[in-house]
Length: 488
Image 1: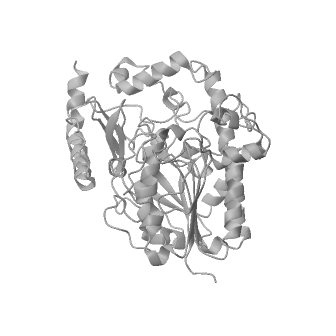
Image 2: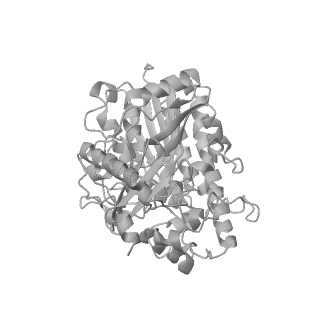
Image 3: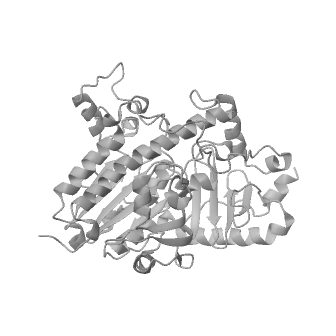
């Protein structure tokens, strides 16, 4: 017997820039399915991850907690066992109605094994076995591994199929297709009962190589925003660059990436074309999942969410990968389509993915438990989907804070509601201050300007207030430390 409870399809990718989609200004990349989804969704203009690194960001998406609270503060650190994911936060009378599965990359500990309220994992990653807990067998391998074996592929001297190997397979055998096959099967199998399905796709994450290499002409592909901004090209600007950024710029110039010379535009163009090919590959197979929802007659009763765990620099500021506080790495696409929604609506103002968990719980008809760091934006979503009007979320969203706690860099960042980014590097005393209203490309760090002292102090107080509310005990550098550093 069918239930009135809505289904939830939550699809997220790894390392996908927000500006790969038409709703964020990209009319070049072939992304017909996600563009079609955006045409009938609530589109968040300024969504940020909590940390521009896979594991900490994923932990926040899954739990509604910042990394210092869920425990996974760097890659390959597992979630704390008492950190509850969405299925674990549902009341028993709601939870028992649902079939709940997780398909794809987990990266939050014990990669292959269903946990945290999910009844089944469909696993694809085999590089994390060394991080299994002691109760697990490190010889276990993913569902994707066993699928490749069943298709006749044979292992060489190692007992895994590395990412570099999988990325070169024909599309029929690629990970996005494998996950879409399982997702479509799941939706058809459970069409007559409520379900929640999370599909976590590795691509367009590196190695930036796939069966879609060649889809885009390297000579014609448009470079991403701020490719022409070299952060250390001007001596005054160089002096204000955090050391971690200077080190990364030097590493890419010295080492390139794989066989790409990143001192040349040609090297960046080849990477950019391959990256867009990966994005289009993902789009094709997400489209198959969305089509299955429609074909099974479930669009009128299914919440659809699309996002990414963080962005990707891909040449912006002549940087690659993530782990930096530039917006290209910290901003993410975020689309939410409510059941039966048929027109797009824009939601403006900075919001954090920390609000995803409470919002989804609210949309599912469950109370938001105390202790989460985020807030529900469900009322605004319902208003936007019903009216199609643009809505400003700033007054209702949580403070938009980004954190880093890694051996090489530690920082706290706030994106203010009036359009400023203030970053406090707690391990070095360095500061960044960008006026996103007049300098959305973050080219000019204003932290050392005397006329900005009052603003720095105010944003510093806002960060301290967030720390108190979120139970964060990191020691911030003084708000005038950049002025002192710039004089040395």
